[in-house]
Image 1 (cartoon, rainbow, N blue to C red):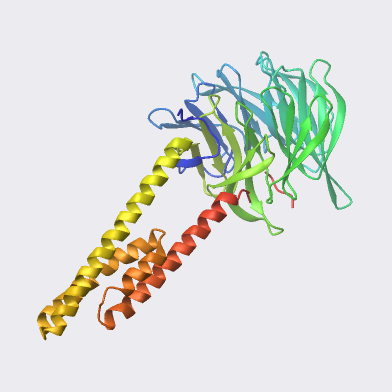
Image 2: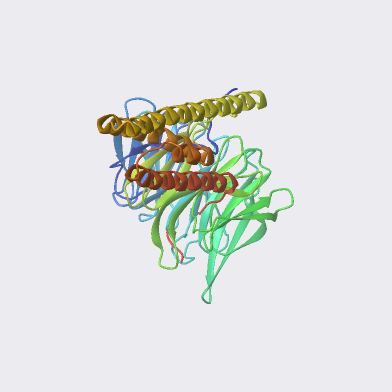
Length: 450
């Protein structure tokens, strides 16, 4: 049996990188998987962390309140959206220096790079109540804004199709006390909005499937993922998560989605989990506990590692595939069952024989008036109790009860043994019940800056 090392249903937190910086927000993984770049909203800097080798860290100071971050396909350039200073920092990853600062519209939030690396798409006005809302198209070679595309108020997320032909922007519009969510579909060649898709309320994070056929859009409140067919540009499915989710990432094979839940409830209490979603079934298969207020989630290009920034706990959770439990073949399962049954039968027989022997010895000694021998025999019979209780706890309580009754132990010993036996039986019942529940369960678990 081949065990996959890729992310899937058995993911676990393997490491927590602490003291990343104040309020880690955006994050991107280098194409070779060796480095993560994390923006620190509260410190106006970006942390560069070696995750493949020594774990060394370096700080690059950028603009005020750095939010979104993106990297060129070749890994040579990183772009940071500085929400508070209305700019984009361009960073050379080889020298780890800011080579250019581009002035843009108000409140830049998130950005995405085209597959060929020639164009950067930046959303602005995301938290500014609609002021300056739009998409700035930046020429990566010259570092200049070549076009501004008008979309709905308060854009929150941006993604580019794998072939680079289409740009998707999520929007959350607030009118007369009501939030409404939408997706602006932009033709990259002409820079025009060709369609606006309604997706409920508060559209936030967005991700495109690796083959470009599906678009996944976060509905922050009440907490769901809208699945959009990119060919028909219609919502085909709604995946209920059950908590307020903000950002999303998809594995390179397209099988799994990961959604962060920074807060939950009307009071926006900080949460600590990431929801794992099966794209084939459209269901939440697991929740993974991470740090406080997880904000951004990113998957390495080889699909082996997931990284989550934890805004409140100033850390990054590293998630990898756990060791799967091999599923035995029918022949192996049958052999295991037969061996287990045989072993239990032998154990019960042994316990029964020992109990009978000790009980007979106690009876003979008592009949002969040998108090010392009787006492020793009773103690020996009492020694059989753990074996009997063990047999009961391992799944055969009824025969064990008869074994206990036939031990011939004096009255004080059976009373204690019965208590132990009942506790063992209760433990067995709970164990079986838990196994049944575990086998049949699957599921997972306002407006904010996420």
